[in-house]
Length: 136
Image (cartoon, rainbow, N blue to C red; front, side, top):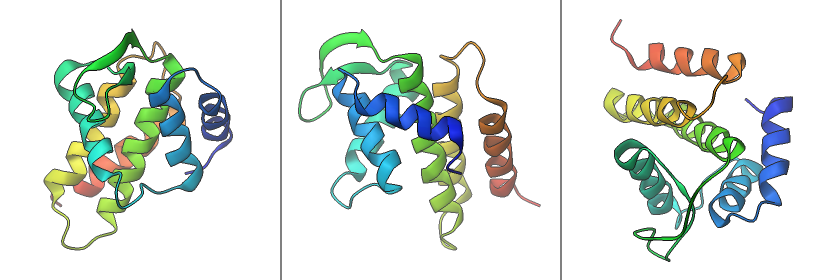
């Protein structure tokens, strides 16, 4: 789902002062989460789902904010794109549970809640992933 806006968001995040946003840019650039980075994405998922906010930077374990300013609108959009990518990967794994796929979609929607007007193409893609995870 690499679209023009996704490239623009990724490129903008790559030069951010936020460590979190630069990490998101790296994941968007590579198209994958490294084997050792899965726990980091799960921590960001917990931040958006439980705290409903992601900050500019955290300690090494992503437990405590080092810089407690919220990430930018593009940061939340990047987070939604990364979560959507995780949902798409889950959908491609036969033994993946519907619950896990829907959890990623839910997290992407929670990130989009921080945007005044999320891009329609992203909203449409989230709806498709959600339908894919629902019983037929």
